[in-house]
Length: 234
Image (cartoon, rainbow, N blue to C red; front, top):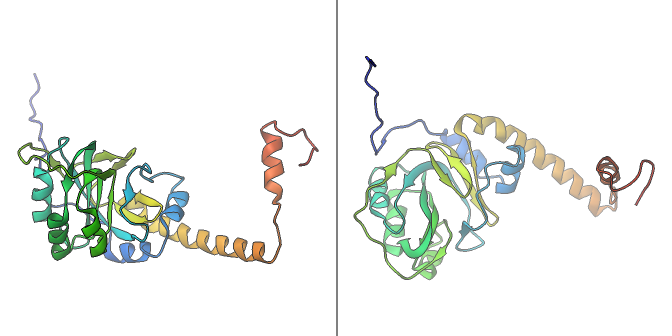
């Protein structure tokens, strides 16, 4: 006989540890590609979750939301308890048959200090959202509206764009897409990002001077993979 009672988490979790504000500020200086590289080429969401406009920049703390396809009830709930600097990261099940958010909700997000929206679903009123300059990443657009009566979960781990996201993780987005870094790993990843940026700047400077245009590692990699024989060159 089991003599202990399992404690179940509530559907809505209000409090959780967040990545530090200074880490978010520093992370905002780096491209999403840099962070994905230093994280072992992990954490980048599938490219179908794209910015509404290429000029979008985003950095903040993940505030996760899981909804049933086509329903935005839990997004409205999340907006009421999210804190300034949070990013709504929404598992909308990839559904594009209707929009889960539009210009009214986005304007409310701005006033609430929510840093942006990353949603695995469609949005609408895209022209107005772009004019607002508010950072939104979505699967696409659809003029159809959602329902508002199906329960979901807030601040539980979610899967979005092939990446597991926990509440409190670091979220960075730009024209290339969105990268998510685990909260505990974020400070160390930023140290690696600084080194990578310096290395890449040095590499680009060398290329502009006509140096190292044919790096030796390419031939070595081809030889190691059997494309070229030992001692053979391109």
